[in-house]
Image 1 (cartoon, helix red, strand yellow):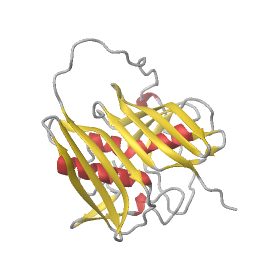
Image 2 (cartoon, helix red, strand yellow):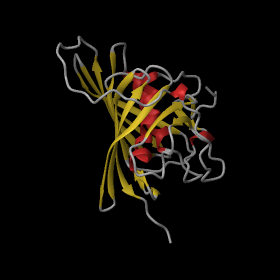
Image 3 (cartoon, helix red, strand yellow):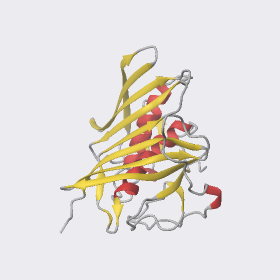
Length: 261
């Protein structure tokens, strides 16, 4: 893993580094790093052994620049088996996004069997060649992850499957945790589920990540399971995996990108 982190901590603020740059606008951050930062701070401040994140919903309502970011968190509900935490990120005195996080306490697994989709038959990462570097859409943009895919992914009208491996920590000096791997990569559900023959025509405004367990190992697998769109509004969903099996799902709402003259 590279030592280039997305953010450098400085007191109570986080300084975005050049690797945070999104692929569309050289002066703004990628939404995935905002989601990852919110998730990392909720985990650091509020998670405990055997009390883990089961759901994180992130609303992305402002395209942030490279100004320092602060994160505020507040416990909204505290129970013996559930903790609900709100987190909000601020830059230049303005809110840039928020997260609602549900943490659940581990317990005994109930008896009985429940229907689940068939086992994932996608080849493991070691059996696939690394994907080529994606095209650079603005000067200075750097790929944020490593991916491995069987055949073409984007530009096709077909179910898409791929593996994603994060290559840098979210915050300098803090190891990337299993939950953070899922939190920072969950945004990939939007381009994967909402792209087709004309490329990606939607930009997501949120991310909801569900995890029944944290990923083991460095790779997170994505499989598109749903897409729907009407009147410029879309939703997309991916099932998530590690090399041992399913771990959860990521869902996004998206709006058609404005076409400039």
